[in-house]
Image 1 (cartoon, rainbow, N blue to C red):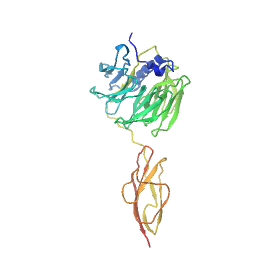
Image 2 (image 1 turned 90 degrees about the vertical axis):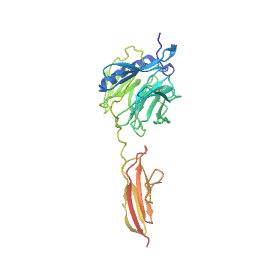
Image 3 (image 1 turned 90 degrees about the horizontal axis):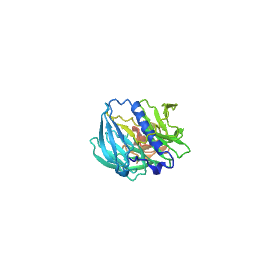
Image 4 (image 1 turned 60 degrees about the horizontal axis):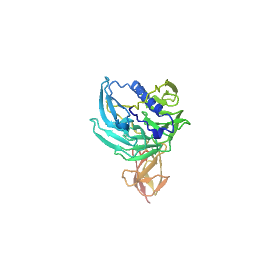
Length: 342
C-alpha cells in the first residue's frame, strides 16, 4: 500500500494526522474557488513521502484544466509558494526548501529545518516559514539569509499575508486550543482568533480570511473587519492526501508602498541669529528616530541621533530625517542657520 507523508513525529502529539492533512487539501479547493484565477496556473504537491520507494510529485494545472508533471521524485513535497519573479518554493522531506525556476531548474534554498509546513512571501521578497516541530517562524531574505521572526509557538502550521502586509499565522496547539495570530509589519503580535485547532489559511481577493479548524472540521471565514462566519462544515471527507496548492502569478506584482514616515520639523526653521539659537526637531510619525547632520551632508542611521533640544553657536546647514523600526526613511528636512558671534 502506498504510504502518505504524515509528519508523525510532529503531529502525534495532536493525535489527528489524517485529519490535519485532509483539511489542508480541502482548503486548497476553497482557494481555487475564491481566487478569481481564470487565467492562472495551479500547482499541487501530492505529498508522497518516499517511504517504500514511492516518491512525490508536483503537478501543474492550466486554466482549462490540463495537467502536466512539473517535478517528480521528491521526498514528501508539501507547502508551496511563488515569489514575485515566478520561482516556486517547495518544502520537502521535513527539513528542506527547494527552489524551482519557471523552466523546472531546481536548487536547494534552505536546509536543516524541523518540519517546514507553511510558506509565504512578503512584498519585499522575504520568505516566511512556519517550522512545525521547533515552534519557530523563520524569515529568509532573498539571498537565503535566515533569522528567527518569532519562537515558542505551539505547532505553527500555516501563514499568509494580507494586502496591507500583515502576517497571519495559525498555531494548531496541542489539544488545549489554538490561535490565529496577526503580526503587523513591524513584528507586533496580537491574537486575531481563538479556535480549536486552526491549520490551513488563505486570503481571497476581497481580503476575507479563510481558516480550517481541524477539531470541528469547519472552514471559517473572517471579513476584513474580523466578523466570523462558517463557510463550510464537515470538510474532513476521510481523505489522506497531503495537498498544498499555490497559484502562479500571471501579471506583474506591485508591492504595497512602505509605511509613510513624515518629514521632521525643524524649529526654528533656519534664519539669522546672534550668538546662539536653540534648535528642536519633531516628528509626527510614532516610533521614529530622528538623525541629523550639521555639515550639509545627507543624514544616515549612523549620523547624530536626536535626543532633545540643542544649542547652535556656529553657522550650520542642518539636515534631518526620521527612520522607523523597519528602517523606512522620511524625506530630508533642511534648515540653514547664520549665527553672528558678536
